[in-house]
Length: 554
Image 1 (spheres, rainbow, N blue to C red):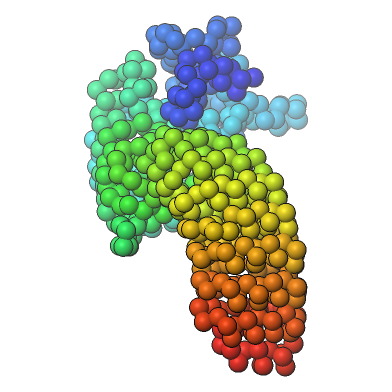
Image 2 (spheres, rainbow, N blue to C red; image 1 turned 60 degrees about the vertical axis):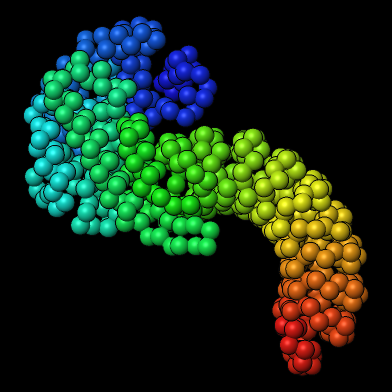
């Protein structure tokens, strides 16, 4: 019911694009608070007029402050379950409890065991904690500023959450990983909500609930801090200089700062981060980037005005993350999102945007959940985007149908040079389609059809096409079902083809007989550098004879 009401509200207030790309976690929780407060008074949630929100929060200010101070005290002392005495000490009334933010965990049973209480979700306690930190005039902005500038971690014996917050935000003497691990998830959420509440879009609400000067100063302190911290961090990122530009490897702390900047909707800090990155190639591999982080990343990258390469392998962005990032696809020349749980739906969104801008040169979609439907969309990208050179689509769920779509598109392309398609299920029918693509192709240099259930029948078509191909240099057919008949086909091809340099036939079913066909063919071929036959059915005593030609590797 709560989620439905929040979603219903955002649908009515924003168009679908804004709903997907600029709604923050704090926005959602503010609406949740409104839903609860309106539900208790049977009012209708309507924020098209911002005054209704301000009026509601102002009316319920004292109640919200009592609930917030209890949340603050609980997180400071690591308490998430409250006794009846603590509820009474916080002056939480029965009417306050009826709002629904705090629920009963256990009831008084008449035998001396009192009722205990907790917030309906730990993240709601974190939200109210941030709410208290922002509105409490006793937490002076200048004290916060002094703590921001002090990199040392305050001792936890003080139990002052404001100190812990600042130590978490300013870990200059500690590694980013250690800092993130040292603080609980509750504190991390508290910090995000702190940034969200002090954003420009929510400042009018806060100015009506606390001393305006104090709130403004807190906002200024946090804005300056995020900008300065991001500036210092991006300057310290590891960089490597490549022939085609500078590559920067982003660290986990950058992800955390990125989340804070997005939650605060701080355009100035986002522009500073984009400028500070100052690289042509950004690596975000293994950074635990979630789908929700992609909106924050796009919030920063949209300020990058030059062509950009982006690696995001081995994260968890999925289809929702692809949707969140669509606004920055226009700048990308390289996009690697391998191992990210992307399905056909995410591929459809991605292809639509990349086709529109036609800048992409390299696309990595390895080990996702892409079927023939997604392969058809990628085929359209190959045909419609003349800039595409490199494509990785291995380890998906593509059969001969999707393989045929891709092969036909590759056949028409005059720019594709490198295609990785290992670990799918195209079989002999798909191999036949790729054989047609190879015939007389002018640009394709590297092709992997490894682990695709190809037998000697499919290899016969591939070998025949390679007799009429002069562009392919490296061909991977590892882990298929190739036998001596396949080796014979490739042997005949090697007597004609004088451009192929490497042929990998690892982990197939080739025996000494098939290897001998290849050995004899090499006598008439001086351009082939290597035929790899490791892990086939060749006994060691025969291998000694075969490797007399050093180009055969067993």
